[in-house]
Length: 531
Image 1 (cartoon, rainbow, N blue to C red):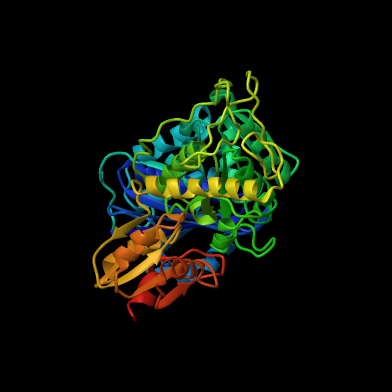
Image 2: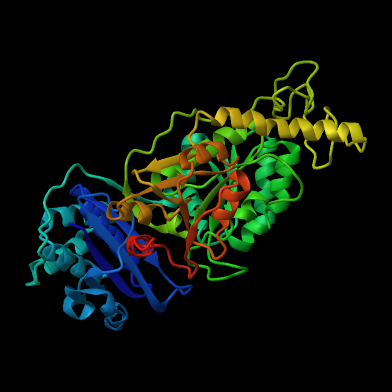
């Protein structure tokens, strides 16, 4: 049985944290949960809400219809009344009055009432609050206990132990974990929603991890500092969203020309320009694949959930370092800031080690090699490593000789062919279910598509998890002559266009959503049942 709770109110009322605590309570009992955040660009006021869906079966997305509304601002409940199930319940701040209590007494009282409504054991709620607030949890525990003691209507769902405790994270935290496990040593950024979450988390842990994390004066400085750190021989990372990412294009091209590894976290949001800063979209797919002037090899991953985000980050660092090229993790607001339960975050790839300054006597910064990869060294040794944005010869000296220009271009582009051979060992697509008709997607539609799939007889789904180099042969082999449709959070069907460009195969019809909101399973079912 799948249940959904909407937490709503104004910005500044702790809505998101309350929803996440509830998700952690259900996860502690072994349930799968997913929490979607919807908030405006306001620090205080406005109308914000978080939607928490939990189930014994996998819950990878949120539902449109709610079984309970938790309203910290009574007026906010009105905005969700139409989406409430007929027998749904509404608990508001008016129901949570108590003398004294903690700063967010109403939040914790309502959590207690909600736990009682679903017959969640009280100790599960107390334990989650204690873990969340640590030494300052005493008042919050009293508030929760007070809410749990109230006489509230009971749901037909009675929560019981559903399995082992599960972990709850958001996509940004998974990227952070992937970066740390990859051996990242230097991170430079300028805040931009929704990419900021990764860098803020790294900033909070830098004393513990020893990673250099610096907020720069702008995105151009952040990207170039990342290239500088890479030149010094250490694994480095930057990233941004929207216009901030656009400012990093020249540095991405510099990374390609100078063959200095760099990982770019590209967290999409609704555009164009400033757009709708706190809402999701997949409008930057083609932009990231052509980000920066000129032709140079790159690699671009597009994760669809928490585990994917971790794995994509590990692979981005690994391939960027090995092939000495820029790597992109193409996320979006829905993945970055939604919370969900997940399995173990793991990867067989090794941690990246900083380069040494040791090199042979005849070292060349850009030696022509059969596989296109020139060995890198850190500066400071007996041999000179020249890094340049100009076209150059093997020693890194500027050249305008046509033969030398072609030779160096060919060398760089050979890396892409060598990379594609190695990528044969890393799946570029994942196939879910069986059927004659196919939904193809990349990135954040994954949760809604997979949650909808059991209701779509005769359908299967294919996830593309790498956009460059595009897994054209793998996808074409799996599609064959089967009709397929794409599901995308953009207005122009960018994924369908990329598929046609790479394979010659044309999507029959694309389900496109471009209002800043992510898909729900109901969206997928309603559209594809009619096909």
